Length: 190
Image 1 (cartoon, rainbow, N blue to C red):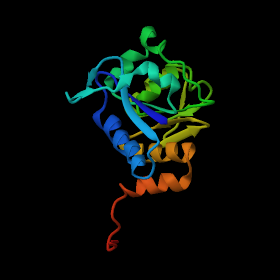
Image 2 (tube, one colour):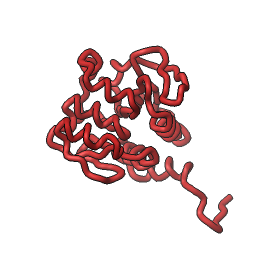
Image 3 (tube, one colour):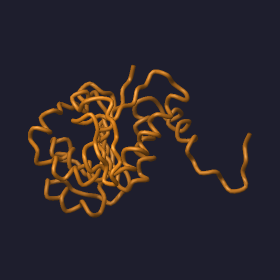
Image 4 (cartoon, rainbow, N blue to C red):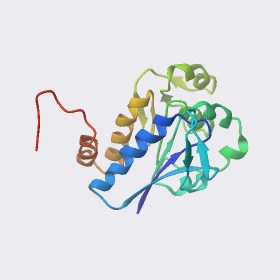
């Protein structure tokens, strides 16, 4: 069984958890050997918009997951200074795909995973990420080996596609993303 863990925390950005959650779960339409979990430090976390979300596991499980995605949101800014929180992670980009949405890049940087690498993040977070010593580039997706950062909520489509391409293959990635692609004007298939 392969595992994908989406890391949530209080004050996470709703779409940066739920869009990847939906996209990652679509792998089960073509494969049955993947499990997707939202993990956190509590049994539930509250989004920036006030939605309570139950977690299916603890962040400690990220250390064994095949893919780890850090969500974004206001809560990420406080977590980068929480040594107790950061100590839960012993991630290894040699054997894991590790990525982030928007301000989740702050957590990657705080864990030392972006040392010497370029990254992207949401425009309001650029100065925070630069203050952590990361060179920020303005792209929707920046990848280095098994590490990726995405900027802008809809970049989750690119990020998840990249994860599947990296973990499985390009054909599988394209097949999964075809389920959510906009319908082309004038084209109907049955």
